Length: 390
Image (tube, rainbow, N blue to C red; front, side, top):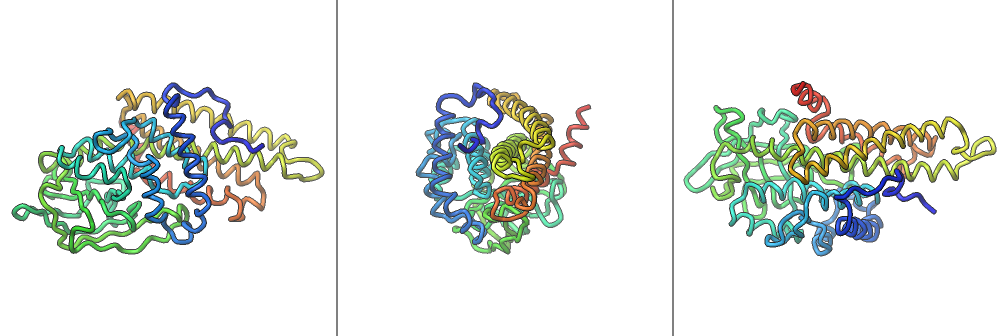
């Protein structure tokens, strides 16, 4: 029997993962296994998951699980979002970008949108009619969000937006984009505002290339261009201009914790697949698992993975209770993504030459894992933020 990624560490379930969260995980796992995994090679080749799959995910209740029921969501918490992201990682369809849609894009509308905005946008995000993206990074501004140049100028009852963005997750499919802009460049961070663009309702919006990445091929990642794009002033998030940087800082801990979710899920899958492989593969007349080096190496990895899972579970508990601070979230992002890279690399080594072959899942995981240390703020930036707390 194949080792179950969800059970590879032999840990009891934390309180936040019990009852309906556990049922949601099981349902999400079935959905990803039956609807997404059989077509995943096709999605990798096309470099995006098709819109039909997003609509199916919406129908299955896998979009906006943590949004209130009154706005079309399921009324859950980040625990429910974690269950969905873990299912994606355990099944191995990491390029399906619903995690960003669910627990990064939608919360901006919930926390900072007007009642009218929530009623207008959240139900359509929950069905998959709208696919969400957040446009932060620019060619000259990555982890340093204060360096954003995209400009939103007020013109009567509209804003005129000009600028460009790059490395935007869901960028080819997204028709609902939160854009980080400068409404007053003279004020620096205090001149930053978030604007919502429904791409099908505006002129002057262009998508650039679907960027050719090392990994996560199934996740469309794009350049976006805004050329005199006009949106109504009612598309500003927040009751006044200049709130964008504060809004971003308030939401980044959840984004960074979500990166940790993907990390621990892939770690568990890599271990499960590798344990199965070394039990079956033979060298010098015995199974690879029977060599002391294999046992010691997997013992180290399982120990570190267990530490990572316990830390992750604690972060989720704190976040659900409103107590996850930015420093701890930065620790989770940096440490878990670093560990993810280490575990996947060591597991590939235990596969020998076959680990370098694309037909083995560990090869794809090796490619997909690398970006985790870069996006959401590089791990070097995470260490800088942690260092400031000393």
